[in-house]
Image (cartoon, rainbow, N blue to C red; front, side, top):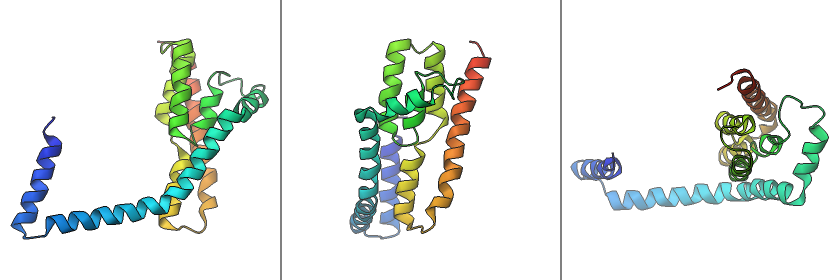
Length: 167
């Protein structure tokens, strides 16, 4: 298993030699194309990550959780910060998950719900930001409600299934 990557690299180089392709020049061209892609998606990426960290650091996330707590009896209040930050930031969500698991344990109901939310949802707004920045899609707001609905379904399903299925 540890030889898979070197094997793939060797196969690419052998194929390039057989076809008499300039492998180094093609590698440099690919790296240049990759840097162009990174430079195109970097500004929206920084904006999304900054917004996620500002929500958490400013206490706005805690305020939103306290405002939503009467409405969302299905999801434990301890998991709500994760449910709110997960669509925006994967690293922020990982930090919140770590706190939840350290405070409540991985085998607790809260820990299991948080873990399933992490596994069954996506960093939706991060992905939309990156994809739309790369593809230059003009009417991207049409995708946002459906993406948000997918996250809501994933979060609610995680909470319902963990509460129904006792391990």
